[in-house]
Length: 220
Length: 334
Ligand SMILES: Nc1ncnc2c1ncn2[C@@H]1O[C@H](COP(=O)(O)OP(=O)(O)OP(=O)(O)O)[C@@H](O)[C@H]1O
Ligand SMILES: [Mg+2]
Image (cartoon, rainbow over all chains, first blue to last red; front, side, top):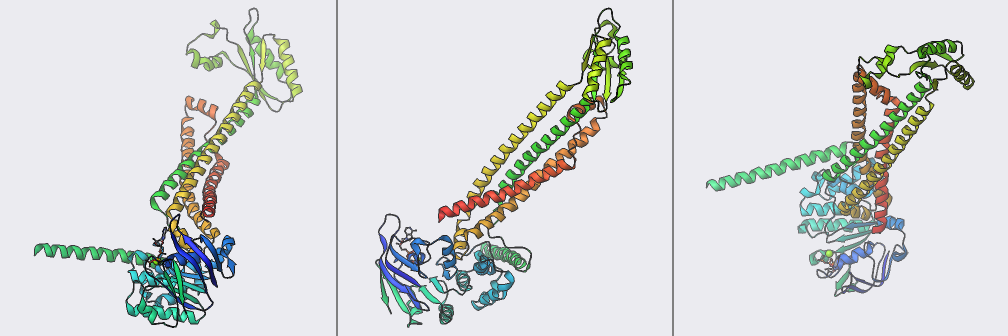
């Protein structure tokens, strides 16, 4: 569902951050994206999200060439992708519940049709008590779980999670990983960017994409 | 020891405050989840910028409705003048040596009685003429000493042009010193002036609208810059440009409605107040003159409806302009 062919990216006129990336993410696959800090994990995710254009090379998303894609199609594709940002990107003036329901809300769905579902998911990630709290008063781990819930609520075909366990304790990290594995079993392709070796060891049948010095090494 | 106690108390106090703030937030959130009618607002109502824009819109609406209302007043007043003036006609008989102007006046009144379409013809007495001239000459002037023309005032009730020609003919035959003034030139000049005033009002309205459009465009751009993060997140969770533009439009329409309501209400109060004041003034002679000139300061239902209409247009314009600006900005961001 995602294919990179000789993709290179530089910010402005600097060095290439990513060089000659060629790989594919197939349907219903599970992979960790790893590499040292500053290796370009977030940058790679932004390329998949079409929030950055590659400086060279070809990116294909859901069989569409991203360089010639129309705006309406970008919106349609983004609805098939769930994202957990490294810095969460929750909207501070909306409650936890409203933040998590946002992807459904912007699709124009009736609140009645998803209220129970959102509440249940929030309970599942341990935020049942925080439904009507606003993000500024949530702890780092709580924000992270809210961000994960927001990505999961649409049952995306592809889930991109950037350091989704960076702010939680190991037992909660394990629980969250189980959530991702469950989602994977129900047919979603998962990409988790992380430095956490312990986390990767818990699911060692997963593919590993390792970024280093701008290049990508794939370990199946 | 004392210090420690103090600081720990302060610490307890501040966590208490945080808890209160959290509680308030929580209640707000709960009330929002369970209020079915209220739709959640994605663009936060930024207090300072929002209030400034509401003020600008209120002032602009006030000016626009004031101008519109005044234009209506002037037009109605000019219609009143025209109607009154067209129903009246004055015949001046200039004092010429060897003729009795007052006697001629009486003859003229006699001669006009049987004409069709003439409701009334009346000779102004010396006292009445004196009263007319009082504001200029002061009281106690003996008009016998002055070359003041004698006046005959004719009230017309739909007299045909042929009748008017006959009238002029008869008057001329009785006294060559008589001049018939059917006020037509006066009425035309008034109407032209009123027309010019209405055009000026429309121009002012146009300028006000332009200024407001620009203010809203700038405010929208500002709000978008301030909400960049929100727009970004909305895009990522799958919101279309259409959806985002509608959110901004809703936000600005709300501000526009509030501003326009304030401005329109202020204008309505001004018109009601001036109508009330002039109706009180018209009890005295100076007030009567003001009323004769400007008509009654009575907007009437149509006028107030126009104010409501202009206000609604201002609110609508606010929403539309912001939507347009948002679309353009979104397209630029790409
Ligand atoms: N907007 C930007 N403009 C210029 N340089 C950038 C920008 N964003 C990232 N970079 C640079 O690109 C490189 C890769 O950054 P990126 O955020 O992708 O790393 P990362 O692998 O996600 O790191 P981390 O593990 O710390 O999150 C870094 O050297 C960073 O400084
Ligand atoms: Mg990163």
